Amino acid sequence: MEETNMKDFDVKELEEDINNFSDDEKYLFDCLQDSRKFRDRIYKKRKEMELTERDLANKADVKAFEVKAVEGGKSIAILSLVKILKSLELDINKIFE
Image (cartoon, rainbow, N blue to C red; front, side, top):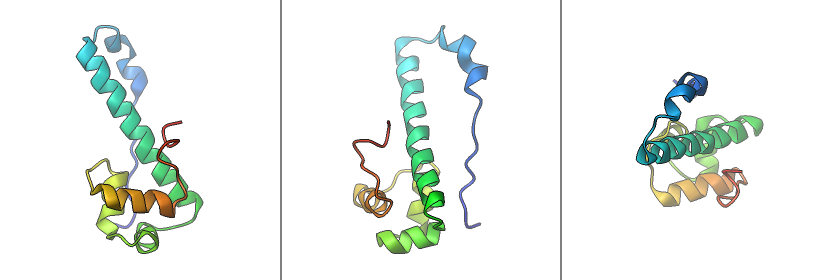
């Protein structure tokens, strides 16, 4: 399987529950939303540049599984993440905008 499956979850289903979340649960939910934005931004930029996961891995000098991992929300080495972001010409300071 070459491409990461970018499944969306329906935030609207959670809207009623969010009002009942504790502060800790709200914080965790916000972190998950930021993580999703981050992954989506990387995935969309790669697609925009018409790169496969393997193409991006070669361009960034990282392993293909690391590209797949970051797009899938898994942890990777910070150096690998920086290489991927630089290869996609993404600024880590602006990626959540």
